[in-house]
Image 1: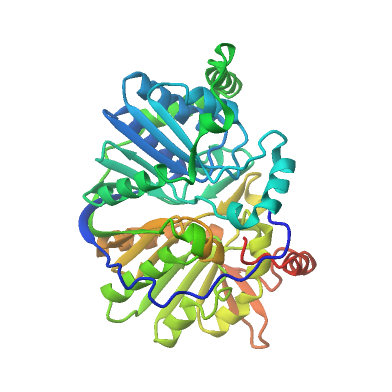
Image 2 (image 1 turned 90 degrees about the vertical axis):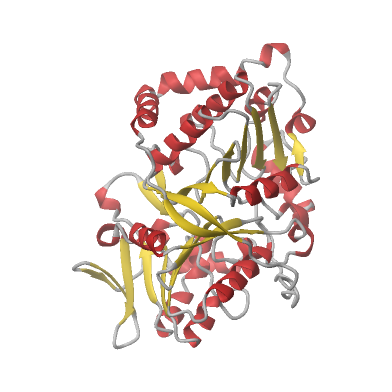
Length: 461
């Protein structure tokens, strides 16, 4: 999909945030502790919906978890609940599910930046991408489920078995929040602007309405998956019954969004608004914890990490090692920065679970910040050029020491089994340490990394 040389993004406009001011309101947040509970809370939220459900996601897998949530949305629609979904088109290949669901009078589905060629899978999309690359390169990376203006689930998880710890091949370590309070109004406004924009196209305009014999296509697909995976079906049903009443934490919340203008000018609205919010909330940055699966700190000029270090902050970064990343390309571009970060005295950790401890792969997917142990960011944005200049992203800046402590504990909960701390030997070689284990060679191949970097895709990843 990303074949061909990439071009550097435009210079950042000096007045990008001059007319924007952060709006902070009280909110209640609950950090969902694991993937299975993250799906259970989504199902429970949809079941409790009375008026409407708004959703937007980058990817929605057509496995049992994805089908289960689609079925819940359809049953909510049967009760009269209005369902609106915006779904990015990059990884969406099952148009029949969507067109049969959208045939329901209470369900509207729109596809963000859709590909024109839809019949031959990746082959036709690659051709479409090459012809319209400047447009197709923009993707919707936001993740949202919002019910009745009262409850929101947001964070880094997409929809699928691998995001909810049900996959037998690979699962993501990720982060979601339950959110209540006045801040939800900003997310609903952002959703409606996207839904009504020309970038979100009605799925029935793209693929038509189902014929009479096709109307049960989705339900047949769900039944097939349910019969194939009865244990998972029972586990999902049981997880919804087992969730306890969430213990919310009070915070001061600031909603941060991109502008739809980004689709034309490629300016980093979300990143600059986050930076402005941090500057206004803190006279000085003493401690900063960065969590991102994609850490490309110098791909777009002087990095935020470098600026914080120069200002005297203690910086800790958690990212994916090569075995803990779902993208070999990103790992290849990140690897040259390891030593630079360590030389800047950044405390660096890599998520790389030992493959011998299980047959299921685990990937790192948490996007978060903790600032001065007082405030934090949770959202969809990675620390890379694609999030800054190409994707539509959003997030929450949350101030409250109680939640900041919870978030930092969550990030380091598997320090002894999943995180490797990096350092430098006296001879300047990089060393990885986990408890009593040490290694001096990174997992992965220098040759393959060099090949990936030679493709010049850093601004497209």
